[in-house]
Image (tube, rainbow, N blue to C red):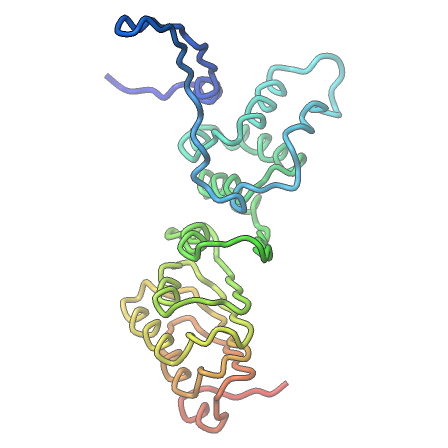
Length: 272
């Protein structure tokens, strides 16, 4: 028998049903108790789900072009927006773009387009990417917060190239093992590393990237590399970077690089 998925809105609503506490009796000790089911904490870091808007603004939800009571479509879209934390790729991908476009428009209107929601829509509607052609800038500048590098890599990676990631790291304190994890970002288009504090970034790290790129799947979209004030990056790294298939521009300001040797390695030096 063919399995048909539940209606889109019903699948969302079923996840939000509140289970009333049921009293139970324990014959062993004579106690009467009640059980409630609590929701688990989100598995996504806060910076992935952060928005500049709030669902509290939905109290004024209304189509400005309509008159009278809200239509069923408006009520349904509002219900979806109220439960965005339950929305996933499987749920939205079964919705035609004619409806998904209206949902996305209201998400943008109320500034509820977190990185997680943006990724869900981009993946659900690959043929409508023109509607999502925008830059998603995610600054992690909170000096009191600790961001796990593993989590950053996982959240910005798109193995199917639904988007291209431009990664900027300022004064990163990473181990050589952490630097090797950058090869997991298959959709990396630009890499910028700023500041003299990253003393673990050296020619050995770049050589590891070069060797990983030989399989043809790593750094296939990487076009720009900026190493700014990295004293342990020398001319040897230019030889390793030559193996990256898409790389066209390197900025090695403040690195230990000899421009004359760079030309011998196939690079054309340019001074601004």
